[in-house]
Length: 129
Image (cartoon, rainbow, N blue to C red; front, side):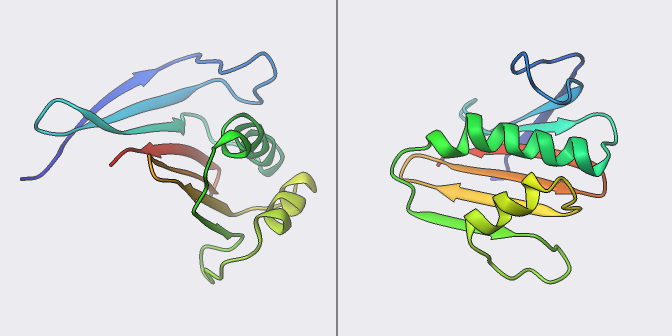
């Protein structure tokens, strides 16, 4: 059966003193057993490229770089031509603060994390099996 999607908007969420943006929508995907299987944090405001890149790097440093036992990575810098690039290359582009599109996925045995920045919107998603 299909999973239900519960959405709740949260304003002024700060995930750290140095987070480049603070307004997000928080979405939970809850299955029929009332178990949260997906958490999505999505920017509520349109972000310029510099802020989007800074936010992406913030979540890379605070989440992705700490994920143990990574078994799969996928990084792209263009949604129209989705060619997997090295994670280090994507991070270098983001540090230049002019990467208009970016996506990063890490997976291990327990979960998957994805971050994306596209058309002024940043999202960070955690999936559990």
